[in-house]
Amino acid sequence: MKIILLGPPGAGKGTLAHLIKERFGICPIATGDILRDAMKSGSPIGQKVKKYVESGELVPDEVVTAIIENKLMTDKNIEKGYMLDGFPRTKPQAEELDRILERINRPLDCAVYMEVSLPVIIQRLTGRRVCRECGDLFHVTNKPPHQSGRCDECGGEIYQRPDDNEETIRTRMDVYLKNTAPVIGYYRSLGKLQEVDGSRDSRELLNDLVDGLNERKRTNQDKIR
Ligand code: AMP
Image (cartoon, rainbow, N blue to C red; front, side, top):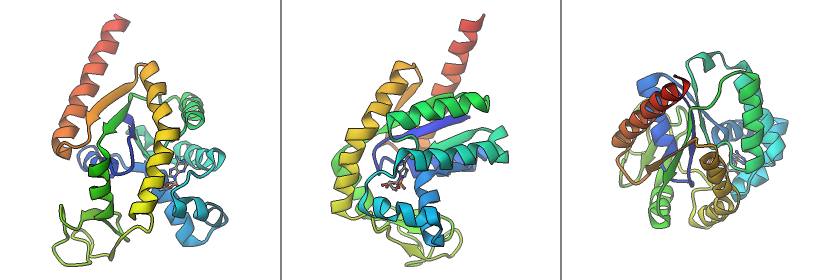
């Protein structure tokens, strides 16, 4: 499986990525997580990107593209496939990604576009909680942890991302509509867009996605014959 997860913040990309990892053993490559780790370590890249990440603005294209290129060129697990979460977020990033994938000879199966409405996004993100250790996702009402403040998986501390507040969520939505919506058009024009309803149960959504990927494979094989 070689896919990109696209959609507004709160569309459920992280939850779907978790299920895909469970079922197919493919680890998500999430630029947001990589940037937050860099910030935590205080590395030069971390210091450079802090102001963007904290305000919900996009980190410059060349910084995130270099991170993804390095990851795709060196990750041994890439043989199994890949799943990009949060990248590309602009059309130049999408075009650069095409060049990288061509170089490593790992063409994309499809870009999965998860669509959800703004009220659902705000409800999901303001209540979202994340494990500091393993990144597992919780929600104050939809999926509370069994033990308050502690991760069900690893017992790590659960926290609220500082950019999951209503004001920053609105900035992230504006940024998404301005920069990332054209990325959807880009993959649609290449015939590589797989649209799914992000408000559905994530397990049903994964089944739909797998069916869609198999259908694509069959159509491509018919074209070759
Ligand atoms: P996420 O965890 O995907 O919601 O990303 C958190 C923040 O990281 C975003 O609001 C951006 O500031 C930054 N970021 C993540 N991925 C990218 C990207 N592909 N391009 C630019 N900025 C990004």
